[in-house]
Image 1 (cartoon, rainbow, N blue to C red):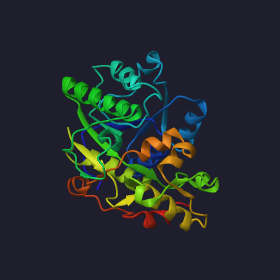
Image 2 (cartoon, helix red, strand yellow):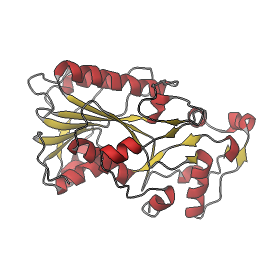
Image 3 (tube, rainbow, N blue to C red):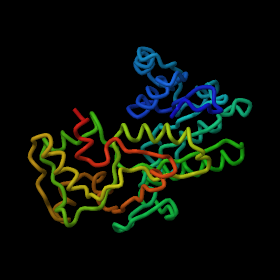
Image 4 (cartoon, rainbow, N blue to C red):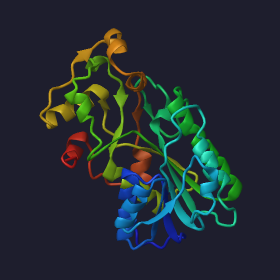
Length: 295
């Protein structure tokens, strides 16, 4: 499917971690040139060993961003925002330093389903208004808005992928299970959404092949599940004890503030736009399917 001629010269990945490497491999297998931005020497060495062109830059240092190979690039922006505040200053630094004589052809941004906030378990689609309620989601929504406004001003195609939880090899909460950290009783647990890393990578590629300019896509496998069911399923698959279950009063005392912020938000994502418009056939349509590829 990626033999189709696309109007970009090469692929540039900013924030090239696990998902970025998966996307890079797909494009390299299609004989596309791939560049990745790295901050550390160790990451640069790792990219070079995988025959990915490495560019050294730091999104917290504007001066280092001036000469990236953005011209006519298919640009994936996978870098996380800063860990504090409500603004994505890294996105600001990047956009401020794109040479307007070297504009990318298309930018695809991985955002989060957290921008929808707490929907009390309702089914939501891309028309559901964004109502981010915690700072980590507000930073992502800020990045979305910056990109959309910049893309409109500079006539650059922007596609936003709002992604639920990502799981895959090396991305399972095994230590949490081994440490027997509690989880809410299932009837109290929020509705959650997730996607296998391999399926997210194929969505990222499909978003570049299809005509997705200006579009937003909810990315998940579409199965109805809750957080406690997620942990129990992983525990059973990995022959670990299921987590002890607590009510909200006990959860406030025993569960980290970060996890509590996730547990306070509940929503089900409609993934039909992703499936239909991007012509996606999920490799792992359920968690049980995907866990078979997590060793």
